[in-house]
Image (tube, rainbow, N blue to C red; front, top):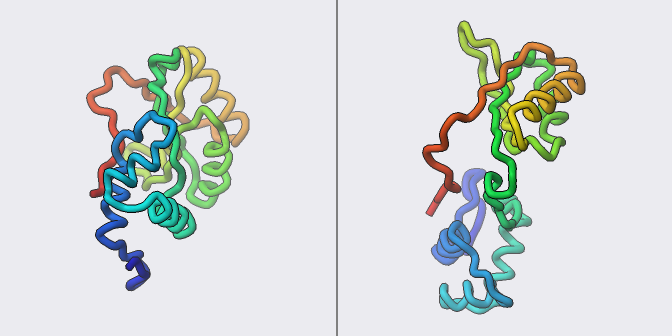
Length: 163
């Protein structure tokens, strides 16, 4: 059974199989969880119990459909790098992260010659819209030293596979 060892959650072999299965495509069917349970050789009740436990433990954030943003018109993407003092990063990061068009928001250490420490990824229908969104974030937070790094080509896009 699963447990907490040295501050880390220990997962059972079945838990790892469930996570592995959920990292792939979920069947589009009236009863996708039943199909997954059948694939794993466990009951639907056990699967749902483990999913609830995963959520309670903070292992599973959510299950969601991921649309292909290019196919629905969001063809411009920009990594926006922000020069944010460390003491203001939490405030600024929370404001950035609250915006629906920001898909990623991270703090990293600034580097010599590259003072940017907060990174956001924004998605829009055009580069002009990305620029306008970044300007809005700048006004919202009071951070005026930033650069937009537009995506030129996508080489890989996939979710992380842990098991």
